[in-house]
Length: 379
Image 1 (cartoon, rainbow, N blue to C red):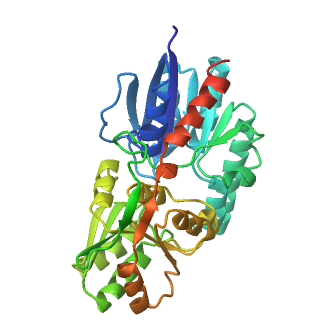
Image 2 (cartoon, rainbow, N blue to C red):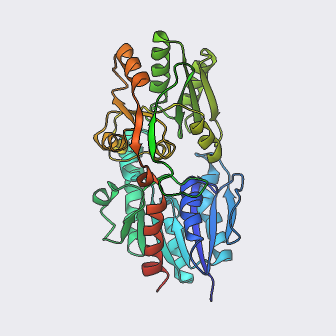
Image 3 (cartoon, rainbow, N blue to C red):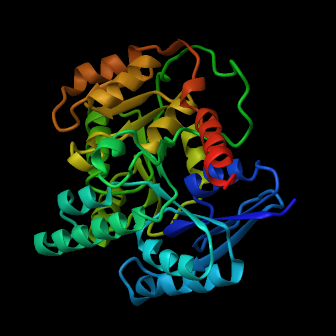
């Protein structure tokens, strides 16, 4: 049987990325006669099956000349590896891949992890003029590439009505939790979980940013400790904004109840999983915003997968999910009554008689493999 080479690539995501490697990569490696190649940002290489190869070709600051040369590095890699299927996790590699497709036949899949247009026009990362120009460039690139793209993976259900270029060539692959050990039916049939009476560990994990609520998490911990000094907060992840990181480090240095892990460097996913396992409650203190309101954060699936009680920002989509599993509470992080909140979270029993199979990646893997076998690898 002729080997089919499938290349997954992203500019800023590490080669050990939870979606690109742990979910898509490991799932695709189960297909017969397939070699999976993963190209991305330099990071420690995880253990992997023999038919998965890593190419950590990117290493640069987010805003640097190195980022602008990334497509050319990627083109050289494409030319050397000659993959038949290319799965792109970023719009930045779309155009150079189309150039490659002119010379060598291949099928392109666009793994849409974010609505980049909405992010640029709403998050105020750059000036209004720059944001608008960049957003238009991204959307034009996506529209042009869509003509030649064989399929789209959508990380969120909400992207289907938001993105005008999909043309019904998509499947939704949500960022559900992929455990390190294989899932076993009914292994998570729970009888209930309570917070301890003291030494309660709160967790903020993933991208560290003001929009995602890192300072709201700090404020919550400080407020609860005024009621009962039994709370500790662990903040673990990478912070892409220098000013935010400097402010956070200043707060952490003055507060012994807060621990920062990472910050100025990427944190391996296994360390984040370890932090989840050592915590008693996960925080999702996102500021309400158009770019996140209709999305389910990956960390929420991770917390649910570990049966970790959660405290989320009020959001109908998130509340439906946590209510389904009796997983926690929804509050307004900008305005809450601390004493009553304290009583509720320590007295509540979480995950009573709940089976968590629905939050695991196994359902998404089945959709992925079916799509690849029926749509991509048969042509």
